[in-house]
Length: 213
Image 1 (spheres, rainbow, N blue to C red):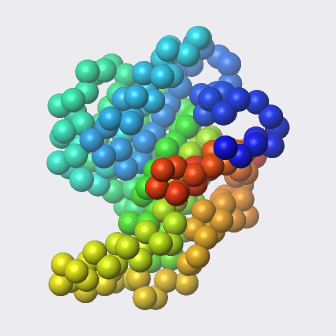
Image 2 (tube, rainbow, N blue to C red):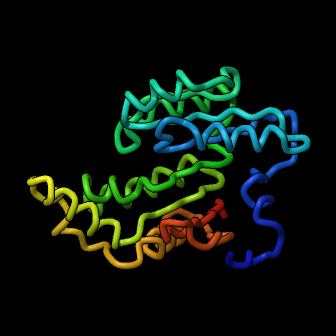
């Protein structure tokens, strides 16, 4: 695991939303939550943290079938909400959710293994717009960007199925080190800074934690 620029423990970096007022609700957003298992695990971890019991997590995913499964499996009705949402489209539901809790941003947003699919289906502009949108809604952002080899693997799988390439694949200019591209955009254009790299996951994907400057 890479060292944190300002020292400290990795768990503290993720679990500290940037304030110490236990009376305020800690709002979390999980973009691309799938069927909700990771969302639920993170929620349970946070509510077990001393002085951090007032937590609410919103999990969103484009796939309504996965959201239905997440709702069916959700035993934490008061603390977690799952909703279908295309993060590249209308984000009014996110603003409404924040307004209901009296907040302007989510204290922590997770975006894990989502960027590649947005990039392949919406092009370079779609990827950069996604990163900018996440920064707009987040005080802290935990990002896992799939590496370029995952793009090539996804394209090969599509061809093996007898289907054509993703519409934007051959025209993408943002290539190579995708985590570095994401970091450069967030730091140069979104007023965020990286505070920790958590190394690589089992799938060789970097986990990067950003916060607003």
